[in-house]
Image (cartoon, rainbow, N blue to C red; front, side, top):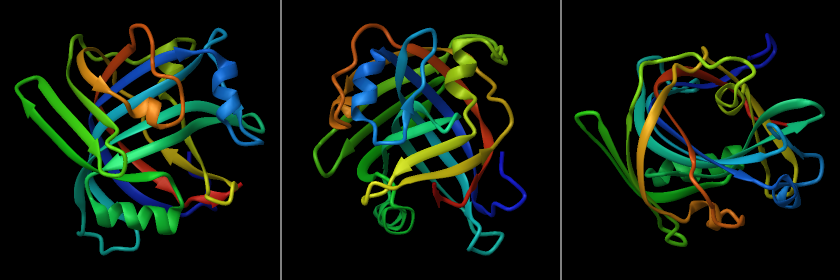
Length: 231
């Protein structure tokens, strides 16, 4: 949650969301983390996620109230803690707007990449394709919801993966950065997914994913992201 002293950076809606996660040996993840960041685990396992969605009604607070825009995004993440504060560590974030990527890299110093992204919905099925311009890292797949909406129980893996209210990243100089996030609890559904190609995790410097992923879908939430700060 945003503290009273933390200013809002941007508000938006995250819609039509796929969460695809793979279990990893925590030692593999920890070896890739900067000093000061500790891998978080669930029942002894670390997780790496690929999350695709539409950022809708994006409103940076520096812009007039009525100005907003929309962009698809796909990110690679893992789960960590810093001084006991749990959060999401972004390993990469891909979006289709070159201007947004340049701005995020310049002012937020986060690992954004410019990609050719196609996201389209046909009935209940969402097609998502991302091809990174820099190194051709690819995600191609299609997904849909496969159950009624539910709220994850606090002790469940679903809750552990999704209910994270702080984001972390590392600046180019190695500094740990964070921003707090405010949103309601995720409305979740089981997901049906056909992943045709996914090289994003390998491009993030980790071994390629193995085994069947843990899959979730969400229609989305409204989020308020606080200013990115040095830890």
